[in-house]
Amino acid sequence: MVRAGLRNGYMLLLFILAAVGLNEIILLGNDLIAQAADEVLGGQQIDFSTFIIPLVWMIVLGTAASYCKSIFGNHYSAMVQRDVRASLGKHLVRLPFSYFDEKGSGSIMTRLISDMDELGRFFSEILPNLLVNVIAVVTATIYLVQMDVRLIAVLFASYPVMLVVADRLSKKLAWLAQKLRSHMDACNEKAYDAIQGIVIGRSYNLYEVQKKEIDAVIDQKVEQACKSTRISSMGWVLKNIITTIPVILCYLFALYETMQGRITVGEMLAFTVILSRILNPIGDIVFCANDIREAGVSLKRIREIDNQEEERTDGRIHTLSQAGADVPAIEWNGVCFAYGGSKEHAVLKNMSFRVETGTQTAFVGGSGEGKTTIFKLLCGFYDRDEGQYRLFGHPFEEWDLEAARSCFSEVSQNVFLFPGTIWQNVACGKEHATDEEVVQACRNANIHDFIASLPEGYETLVGERGVRLSGGQRQRISIARAFLKDAPILLLDEPTAAVDVEAEQKIQEAVERIASGRTVIVIAHRLSTIRNAGRIYVVNGGKIAETGNHGELLERRGIYAEMYAKG
Image (cartoon, rainbow, N blue to C red; front, side, top):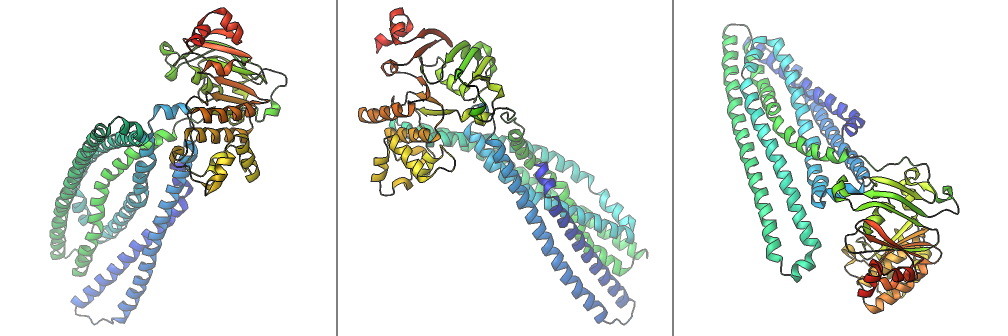
């Protein structure tokens, strides 16, 4: 945020210069009128042309300065917001996978939308107004000091009370703003869950339960907002009351100074005009602390994202051609991992295995044994806590993460499709993919004929998360995407587990086609699908409990044989 502000600092400087110029023009005009008033009251004849022409020029120049001030201020605000959003978006997509697991979607979206809007208000309203008010106070103060320094002394002696009141109010408002943001996070989380789980919610008649949960969070949010509004309104009323006191004192003192002959009647008239140019800005500056503290809450929440360390980018291996030849595709030795670093709840414990290049390897085991976690560590979504991981003969730390991930294509039973067209969802498997490449990938995945039968063909919108397609169709689009990526290692998380028999046959044919000539790693739930795997690892308690091929494991009559017998 600071870098964005400095990068566009030239626009802020132009804004400040325009604001200073505008105030100087106003003071010169005010001085001219005071001089004319003194001459009239002194019984002198004045030539109005000597005053009208300069005043017209001042009006023209003041209008131009005011226009420039508005343009430069708005441009500065827009450019800073643009740079902050662009920087935050670029940073967000490079954050570790663990950050998105730890932070809820609602919290992240609140920060990207509501907190960014509040930060935008700071740059578009609060900061420009603060600078304008400071400039107005400084220029008017210099003008009044030249007139009579005692007027300024009386004026500023009246404001310590305002400072104390404003400070207490701003601290209270900042605390309420923090609470309000937390309730917004919770509200967005509940709403997001309700939308994503709408099928389950309606299937189990959870509508009223979800509605009550959302209503409860909204009620708390409204209550906090009402408290914040009451305190803000109280501050506004106090501001008006307190600023009235200095006005009265200054008017009385100016009258006294005029009666004593220290200032002229024209100067007293000029003082009363300038007083409004200094009193309101002072009040705004004092009570601006409320807005700054509220914006500070949003800034702190955004900086929490900005301060997160990105995934490493220091690997020396950037292409598969730099990897070793005739080496195992993957080697693990003593790998341990626990979510959140809690060793007491380790998911993987001293795990060692080897996947030869060009072979098919399977991992089987009960639910929650860590099979999916293995896939996450293979792709570098998480860093292991202990142990060694070699990819194509090189320690994983030596790989550039993007290059390492380009070695993997994953086909999961839980397919995610972007809310775009079928073509876009397939083409994301390869940058700058041609139409011919996309069509061929879909042919290999046994989905081209279905796509061609649609009225919009490849331009058919799939809906959010692909809701307009069946499970089998989504799965085959996912396989087409993997075909297009053409990675050397294929990760299969039981892609036929949640489809009907007809779809399973088409998916199985596509999987066999894509697996040809590649290193294949399978998470298997149906053991019949991995009978031909060259090596099977049985995962139990976060460890490799058994290893061998299908026949060897059955002869051992251990965990695998028991699982196979249960079907």
